[in-house]
Image (cartoon, rainbow, N blue to C red; front, top):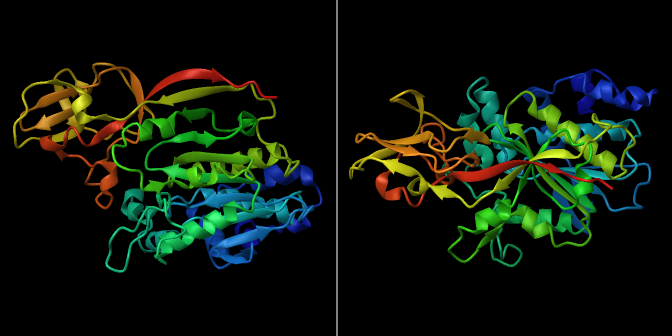
Length: 406
């Protein structure tokens, strides 16, 4: 079994369950460990509602079959390995006899996930951005495949048997036969937050203390075309059988701390749902979170501009490092920006762009040098003619919020 290889320990032989949490979290799961979990899940499959779902494992609880299973979803984007730590936790709980309810661990995009780890093997030690294309996966000719979390509205009926559509159908079939789903993501930047949840009580004991609100509304506010795609969240949310639906960002894709955050949040979720009696890390919860109220996106045209743009200008993200001295700079997720702060510069005119207000940004446009495969990130530098089309970021108003858990 994969955990015995990783831990040199057999969780099924655990006689003192009081030590479970310390034993599991005594090891920092690295990318090589997560690869072992990935390979184990990738070669497994489950049968549900008469359908075979590949790249998924069934973990039996002590009351197996009495309640619909709970799902831990990892790698809906292939380059997001941290979610595999959540599946590893559930495997350990199952082996130790500490799961009351059945749990399914599943890889959201098996093709992209497989390509990601193959690329990691070939280029160990390189920057995570070099594997950004495996967010979606690449086709036979090196083209970027469709995003696993951007699903056509007619995905169930269209005449298309591509990997993307087939997997979307499998995830929807799975969603119709479960009681809850934890969707674990990581980010291109330092983004650790809860992106969506159905019930406030599902966040009790959370090791993540930041919550995005109004995200879907902010994104839809800028949609001027007919909606042709939807996210997995929007597909599953109307299903009455799903009473728990939470999405998280566990940090930067290959940050060594991200697997710990993913596993710790998984433990809190399973505990809150009564699926395990193993205590999460934070026994006492004040209910205090930091709220990031997401506002509609701003483009480079929405920034305050000083100077005259030239037709041949290219606009770069930037910061002022000393009075009058400005350098190119990539803003990171949830980074705080002050009103009037220099945030971009056009060259060669040296026209300066400043922030119109105080905010913390998410989904910043990205440097085209680092992210050369995905046009959805921006990227910069951009021609002045694109200043009104390309987002600078989604600004967030930051405040404390109190949840009164019942």
